[in-house]
Length: 122
Image 1 (tube, rainbow, N blue to C red):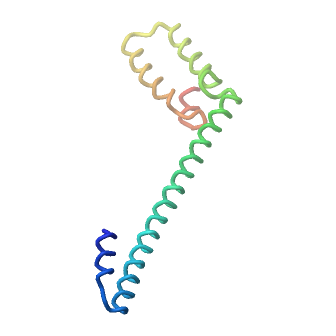
Image 2 (image 1 turned 180 degrees about the vertical axis):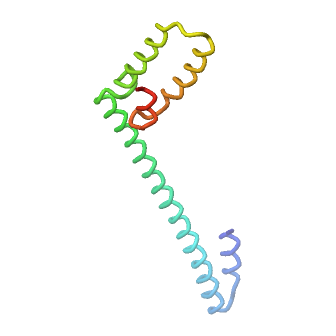
Image 3 (image 1 turned 60 degrees about the vertical axis):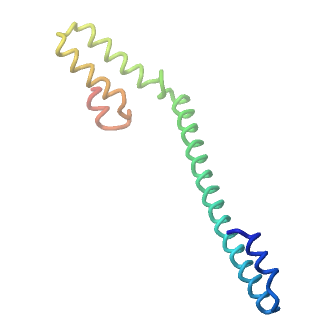
């Protein structure tokens, strides 16, 4: 809203009641806009808090995995490396190796706590 133009109109009013009504209307518009701005700011702050919380949880999870030796280079990685090395020692045909590589890649992306992972690994 163009407040300068509205104020200019208000100052040209001669009757006191018109002046009061116009000022009241302008103030109500300004108050409403301020409420909307405040709501937007609150929503942004809440969203930022949630994102920060998620980031902290991700970092905490990564730290715990490293401490428990289940992250990169941890227990899961060592088990998978052992399976891959045992398979290479078998000298399989190219077609079987290709299928193994696809399945092994899928297994690497699987959560080590899932049943699929444990069935495939054993």
